[in-house]
Image (cartoon, rainbow, N blue to C red; front, side, top):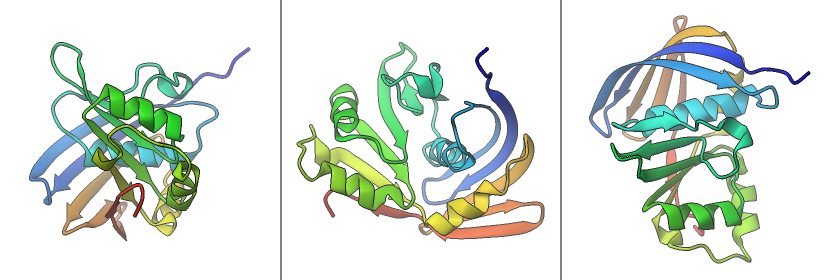
Length: 181
């Protein structure tokens, strides 16, 4: 019998000063049995830091290679943004940039691996792909927050992230990079 997903209920107070986005989010996250906490946190941060009307998690979950973990669609269902996490393959990024004008990747120490695998591949509209890098130490700290019911505050201000939960503040720099920087 296949293992089922574990449901997480996370309430997020989002204050994205850099983008002027202030929201109270009630997230229901399905964690696939093969998904580690680091990846779940990267998905969650990607969702929060890209938050806009029409954003959502992939319906197919991690098992659907044709869908990004997070996407933005308009009212007609047209995909406006492909938001990936970790170190997607060159083929996946090529496909994403053909499918959407806006492609973003949220990664931590995977950036070096991501750039290495892209060295020998051409990617459609590569210059439009934005890579956001978080320090591995930050995502490692977040892995310890594996509660199924969690409330936290996430603030982005001047390129810095502040995640506050249980009276403890975790801080990191969010760096914007290109694929070939």
